[in-house]
Image (cartoon, rainbow, N blue to C red; front, side, top):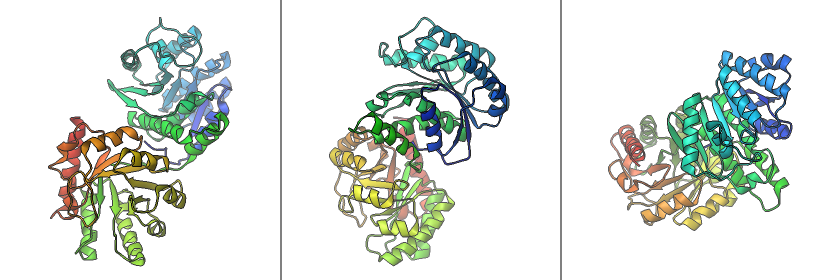
Length: 455
């Protein structure tokens, strides 16, 4: 659910002057380059050089309509992903008819609109007043409209609102989160379209679109303020620009070097990564700082080969000295808010939580994910207090960041987590003490993925 990588993508936007500044700044915040050309005589030339095309129907004019036709044809011919933001389609037959005309001459990668706009495009008889989303249809009706429009057009269709509904390949993905403050300033819908266009430049897939929706909502949450709409807009742009690292929390390994020679320990870490570990935590509770830094650098060199983030347990100074991707703090370690100030906004910050209240506070204070447990008794050298499954379930529902289960878990006992919306599982002994960490990691990862599919 994270931001597009900083790459030299040119995003061609034919959009409305009401929000053109916000759209351009959003694209810049994501590390891409905006060009807002709308003259028909240059539309083909500029579109052909772009990585992604964004068409927005807001405040539509004859000139922009002509340029959109030209740019759509050009983008399709060049294999450039196209996002259509159907702004105002529910309140204007002109715009609805124009979309029909565009679909006759080209295809869209994504069609985006609020609930009313998607209903209007799927059902020619539906209309509404104004450009705001209306809540005069139930969720099942909106989902049906999303899937119908996706089937008819071959596009990924997004109905945005309190819950974004993303339709692709005959299925709906729900993206929750955000804040009511997004509706207090003009142009946030247009900004979300810009985020999608940038993500498509990176990878034109349904997963990329879903991640774009998640990222925008997450930034909205982080930007929420009691100071007013002006401060919220500034906060929103700041959060969009904040560099973040994508997290795959599926299988989180916490190391244990007890009784192991360094070369054996490093070999076990490598083997586990070969088995599919997606995030790695180096835990050395008693090792002196200089030795901890030295070991962290060696482990980091291995984890980087696999593209897996390395998290340092507890010790912010070790993380900074070894330039690792993040740090994890427990209940008795440095407070989350202080750790966030020390490591900055571009590093991963994990936190341990055993109650809904501590999880919510950790999220507010800047945590990127929560580790929750112990689910079962453990044999590690770390003190553990058992966490009821009901508490784990409540925590996953109380915070919008990933939550992983930890404590005595292995490939054979994950069924206790069925129907709980965790992002992944953590392991220590199940992998580190296995004869083959690679096989143990692969088995545990498969068991979790099977559990998630059966949910």
